[in-house]
View 1 (cartoon, rainbow, N blue to C red):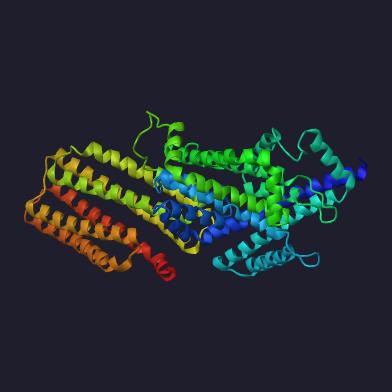
View 2: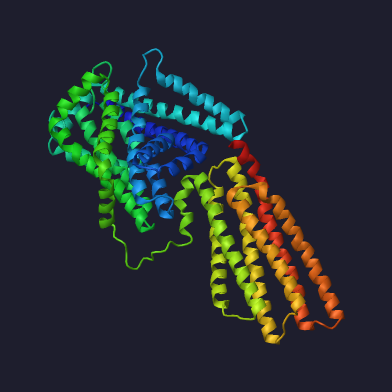
Length: 579
């Protein structure tokens, strides 16, 4: 081959690599911004997946079409199964839908080759990318910028594919190069019209390349570029039959991402990844033999439906996933059972979920859902803090310290949760999240701190109980009555705060403010009553000192509870407007 041909091959290969980069950047930019824009809707869609298999398939297809990546969807699903948001059976149907949704990428690529020599679709989308760039440059609002980023991403997808197809066409235009490539394929047995063992080679190649790139869409783009004939000569680097084999392999290779994401997760999360692998492998087994022995007839049939190779590949990709879903849908429970057999429950693994698994880092890929999970975990932390408060009050009033060990265990959990939630919030704050979610994350830092402080004051109360026992001192009946009244106000305050925080409901604020004011007033009453009892000689100095400190601690617990409820005002109004 002349030196000019070698240089053309090098130049084209570099352009193909650059096209892949631009294409994947566009996919990431469009998918991630659509995902953030539709964060709440994704959460609602995932909630609907629990209804039945068909809604699960629809959910998986829609979510994958939105984020433009079946790998991203399956990683989400693994995360949801890991934290208990989704059962394994529900996950199976959503995974099937994700495989259907990912075929939209092939149709986008097929669309990019439409148009004529004077004005192509790619040129239109190049303009769209520029408009998106201008929007992100000029506008300051996050929502508008996100729209700009989506437009940029869409444009880059088409530009990236156009670069790849252009580089392949430039090689095909050179007769020496196209002849050399065809001779290489024939020499290794990949140039035949009817493939046999070569199907396995191409299948494994597709699986390996997809696993390396972690994107079946990127490999599909390359396959379409290689299989599309040169407009002038009508020659392509690979046949449609070869393209179909690689596409089948890509469907298995895309499972690598979900399998990788399940490492270190719960058994059920690993089983969800296994269901994904079993589904795709089963589909490939069903299709591999027809493609191997009747591929040329399938190619002729597709050629009659639509003449363009890129559309033929997109149709085959869609047909493969639709037929596989229809065939395997009745056997969802069997797939789940098989996954359970392959990934058995470990005897050493605790049946109970770790309190920290609800904040699985896989959820960071869907920030809107991650924010919701943080809120749930903060509620859990608050319940632990309030439980310890009540436990401390029981020990103080009864003088029975039997609950001290359980108190200490709960306090350790509160401290660990505080640290874990804070670390998760830091990671979450680095994600691109909506303005409302950003305010929530900022608020959650303070709420978590308030919860932890309630636990600390409960610890102080436990120490007061121990001090009274050590001093052989006790409170008078009047003092115990005042403590009981204060406790009732704090208990009522916490009930309303929990309802307000859990439900994003500011209608509880009036009751919360009343109870918080009541704790302030009761603190003053307790202090004044203490002075009167001391003057009358009805209170020992030892018990009196503890009583005064107790009153202040109880009042501060009320303050922290009020702070938690008050933090809702930062973002609840925006949630109401959005709904």
